[in-house]
Picture (cartoon, rainbow, N blue to C red):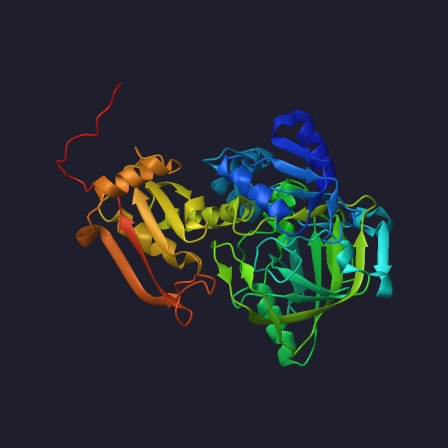
Length: 448
């Protein structure tokens, strides 16, 4: 099976023309695309958007067309995975963690991403239609770039969706969050006085992008997990300037190679975060670009941070990990959902079936430490559809009593992007919204 972004778009548009919107009118990179995305979200519409006439602030047209909203639909992602909206988190986990398939390495002449190779002054990052998403963003950002580094001790690669601000034709500023495995790799090399080899790969089949979001131990490679999601090996190819041991996806649209400079910090941001708030300017890392490769007729993929595109794609890995861990401790667990309303990171809904006394509290205590971004856990009975916010809020209102059903854990590690955090610590907790065994409250009415 051909696995790349453009093949997916052709096949998907043929099967679901109502879910792809092509825009041939001129559209600007500075807030115009993101405004369109917001307007569609207000109508609860999340089609794939394909823009063929993207221009910069001077009205100059970019060579590459722009694709965004690719991963903004839970049902579309589930369909690509061969799953459904309720099971996609569990299926994602089973494929990516339990059925991994090692990648294969192909020759350079077989790799789509090697069709054009640019070095030195031929590289111009400003030729890419990277967007300015929010009013306070300082410039054009890579938001769909999977930043890849290698652990210097084990030689194992790691991919992570981490932003990069273009500040010059061959210079970027990259934010590597402190708990990310890429940051661990950078810190090891910096302690040795060495720069960090890295590559951004941008634009690929949706399943490849989803697989690169899998939650892994350290060090573990994402490439095998991506193979599990694809149900076939991911094709890799050696880099141009980082050594033959540094492998990148052969069928990506664009690859940017370079080095993160050791012992140098530069200001980066502010930036509109996935939390829905503008994050502050922070000290980040400088990337010096050594090579850019891309396929002929490459497409530029963008992810709109803080909206469905980011939140949907990141939720499946967390749902799968949460389901697996909680299920081991609480066999009555039926389903897990990270809703958009909780930034798809902070809030977790758990559904229990045939719960025993104490199961809800055990589930809360198990789920919270699984990821530093998990903040609130709500547990519901099997008659509550956790994918329906109205039912969730009804159960919270009528089946919980805060003096009895709330658990609170102060001074624990949280996300630095959470605006309520203080000194990297926060308060986490959960609410048991289930009916206690033996409760004599009246039954839920039915019109059937």
